Amino acid sequence: MKHINFDNKKVLIRVDFNVPLDDQLHVTDSTRIEKAIPTLKYILEQGGTLIVCTHLGRPKPSTDNAKYSTMHLKDTFSALLRKEVKFVNDCVGDVVSSAVAALKKGDVLLLENTRFYKEETEGEPEFSKQLASLADIYINDAFGTAHRAHASTTTVANYFDKYHKGFGFLMDAEVSNGLKVLHDAESPFTAIVGGAKVSDKIQLLENLIAKADNILIGGGMAYTFIKSTGGEIGKSLCENEFLELAKEILAKAGDKGCKIYLPEDSVSASVFGADAETKVVPSNTISPEWMGLDIGPLAVDAFSKVIMASKTIIWNGPMGVFEFEKFSNGTFAIAHAVAAATKNGAFSLIGGGDSVSAINKAGLEDSVSFVSTGGGAMLEMLEGKILPGVAAIQE
Image (cartoon, rainbow, N blue to C red; front, side, top):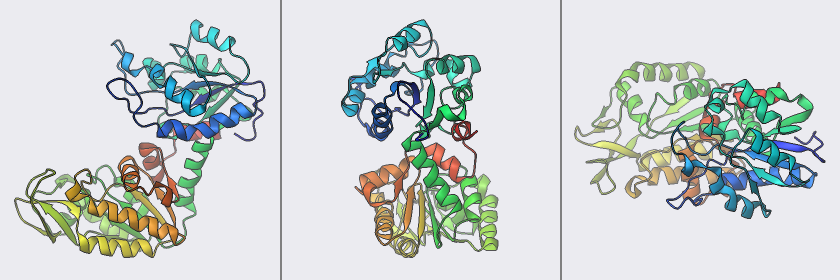
């Protein structure tokens, strides 16, 4: 957006303020709002006037959606911006046009939740045109929704020429760091992929096989791969319908010279629960009534050695059920290994909700190169997909 002159201009900016609220409708985690502040302050410093739009939650049409009103964000937003934010209880229509007309240079107006209109998620052109009519310039700083072809993230950009639309600083950082990993990764390049299901990560794995030197697989998805190679996994999570695909992925990786590491051992549990009885066993000989819920010490050691020898690292998905303390060691050990490798000069990107949560819980968010704010968007980007919200600005 640095090519744009904001002085005396009204700027429609799409942010991702989809933050958690407690029962009293107070913001409990303001990270997403904080991340947008540098972009907002820059526009104000350049003489712009801000019209801020976002979604909040998943409101349903024709029901009482008061708890999803962006009005609940106003106080936290004002405090973080250190400026009084005005609010209007709609995002299009006469009441909004009047509120925008009354804005003075340097004012900030927060619009109501864009998802109160079904036209938002449908990317409907007329609704998008109404949003666009409010401003001279459109800025997208909402990477977390860049994979959605919604009205306020994508279609609205069609009503601004290339001189009057751009990325905010957060969006720009997300896109440039994602592209760096995909197209300019220094070798050895290691991808750490975890989470529950192989089915959620098929395209990611397919894309990474052609790019990465190593892929470390943990989490529940590892057991589908282990079973596909003949291992006994007890009651561990397994997608039997993906066993053949898991075999194919392992074979493709071998053909491409990408080494896939599966956890040699696992922390197994008698039941799925925080207080379960546990024992460490080889991952391919888990007892029939037991289940693997974390990678074991041998796997931690092997994975950490690969990470420490890497120059580029991406991490998407935890190594186990890290919400339970007994099964958190693998995930946190990997977090520390990634931080240590980063300190040694590696570039590390943490992309995906649970991985971000893990790195934050470990207190290491400032010890890695980049932490993505967009779980689904970053995952789709790493899968090699074109994100509608990015393409709309680049056109």
